[in-house]
Amino acid sequence: MMKVLVLGCGLMGRAIALDLLEADDVEKVAVLDVSQEKLKALQTEAHTQKLSTQRVDVANRSRLAVLARRFDVVANALTHTYSVAADRALIKAKVPVVDLTFQDEHMKLDAEARKAGVIVVPGCGVAPGITNILVGEAVDQLDEIKSVEIMCGGLTPTPSSPLRWRYVFSLEAAWGLYMRNPRIVKDGKVVEVEPRSGLEKVSFPAPFTDVEAFYSDGLASLLFTMKDKIPNMVEKTVRWAGNIERINLLADCGLLSEKPLKVDGSMTSPRRFNSLVMGPLLEIGNEKDVTLLRSDAVGMKNGKKVRLRRQMVDYYDERKRVISMGRTTGYPCSVVTMMIGRGEITSTGVVPPEMLIRGKLFHEFESEMNKRNIVLERSLDEV
Image 1 (cartoon, helix red, strand yellow):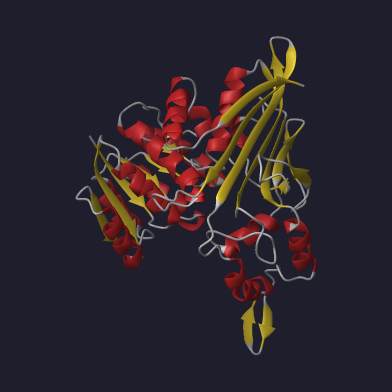
Image 2 (cartoon, rainbow, N blue to C red):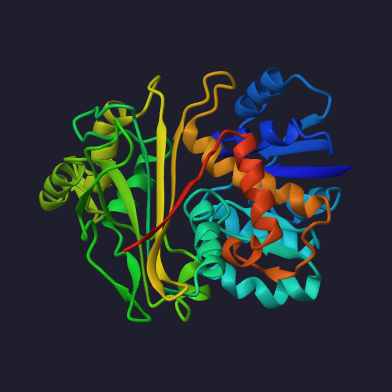
């Protein structure tokens, strides 16, 4: 029996906690968040003695470390702003952690985690997360890999809003995805490309036949772990067709700039102002979300050039009222967290998902996803 601590009670933290509470070998789940309102809502929804909640500011790392020592493993569902600092505190507390987010700084924690004798699994959500795990599987399945193309995105069932897209979490974070220079691997070297470049029309199973994909900075730990094995890797975000045309118009007009401007005596940025104006038009509200994912690995198998494709179309869970992005992001984290809690994973240091969930652990991981109706279809075809 294990005791698990969950950091954060947002959409992801909620999904992780609810999933952990259903496991017979989880004795206790404690959730920390700064929002008493979110914690109270979770308590009301879960209605079980296995769950406890506590209002804690996780920026207080010493307090976090003291609390964490009472648990066997931690699932970190905090935002990028707090995730690495929290992981440092957990390493000092000598408690293993599975983190939804990945930042380059995570790789610098390896020696510290090894010394403490604990594992840190960063980027264990959907993308990065499931996508990385599928790349690790491809390395094991093919004799040689020439290229990997990953696509992932959250959509509504039909195009909606003026931008043909709605955000689930933070609009400010979404603007960043559109505006950052993505990193890809080309001929074995990490290179930066222009934001929103690499645009192509793609087709998923109906009704998602009219969608598009563009480069985004989602290779995450693959930039460190796989660039010497796979000479060409890209990650793309999927949207309904027409989204990038509209985003480009906003960007070209300067409305996504972060450069401060003085407006009626107050300083703000066009992006901030734009978020305030467009936020109500773009939030998902009561619409149900869908997550699309595809991983294509092209290489050699038994002397033939082949493409190994893994693909997923996941929908909002009507019964549990868990959004698809919460399911596909949260459940990989909860599953790996439980693997650690059961003692199935004994590695130490910083171990990204693509290096950890291999062989027997991969088959167990996929089985657990199937139990949660997250199905990763597989095809292997000559090309």
